[in-house]
Length: 426
Image (tube, rainbow, N blue to C red; front, side, top):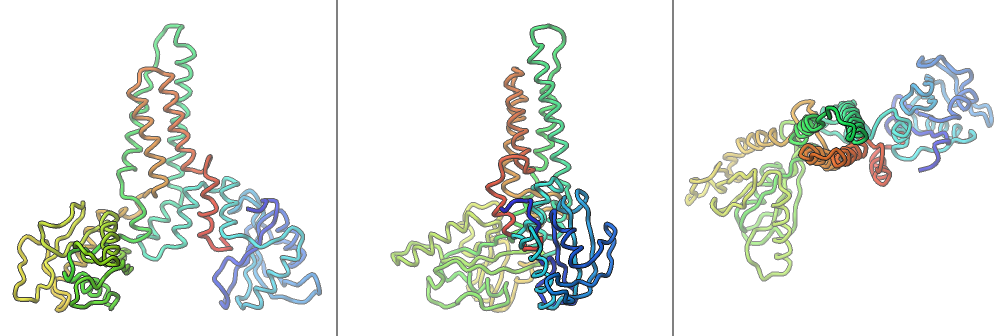
């Protein structure tokens, strides 16, 4: 990332043409550039109409609303100027071109406005991750979950835990320093146990990945069980090839869809059997890998042969055929006639509610979950120890993990990947 001493500029609204475009600048030269292009600065946080001119030749670029935000009380913690101009491509290009002629001004990198907000303490890493999810949210549930994270709920909880850990660490140091002087020694273990229990409650809640990426529904079974036909019926589209020839499906076919506002990814797999065909065998190996990744498994085959999976739905497929036997199955379906398909969609939605965060409930991603688990385990170990020196070390481990979640330490290597998901103007 380039030095924060630069002033950055980018289009923050949608790609032209549009009715209105928002161009943002942030950094030490933002105010000086605004004065050269638009005249006197407006009062802070008050939009004023200004005629924007190109300093190189004095030509009029546009008439625009100019807004000023003073550091440190701005979204990035730096001086910011926003220009709300007409959204034609030529107008936006002319404004950005004029701004780039100003000393110290350059184009922003993806996510750099938010990255500066993180560097300047306006947000923490959990809020930045929530913003990334908010920008990519496509369903209402995704939006609400992302807002819970971007809004600072997790940051507030982490700060509370960190303060508690600091207080316990201070008590541990006192016990260590004055252990030989007699007197009553405070017991630190109840405090560690209480914190561990609070963390465990969040650790046990549904994770964010199924909501962010879609609940992975894997359709599996032997060859010619009707897997591809079912995928097509659920997707209401001919996405998978269907033939009476066993082994037609040899690769993984993913079909995204939304059921009741919940994102799903249907996965069609190769029929599970022993095969001497090299290509088909590769497909079967991929199918077995998908069984392990499935959030929900739809099994089309002998009921007793269903793989061991925490969320498996045993389907009696081809219910329209005379030899159909619905016994020992959760649901009878026919992709040909549509029998049971509506009920299956309802069942998937019901099962999904058990896997997803509820409403505005805070949900962790894998990185946050693993680090919080490290902190919780350290507290549980510390609560079982009699030695204050060992307890102090476990508290240090817990505190370090909390700091890594919030981005205080040890996260520089993931920032490029995170902010690469943002647009230039965010």
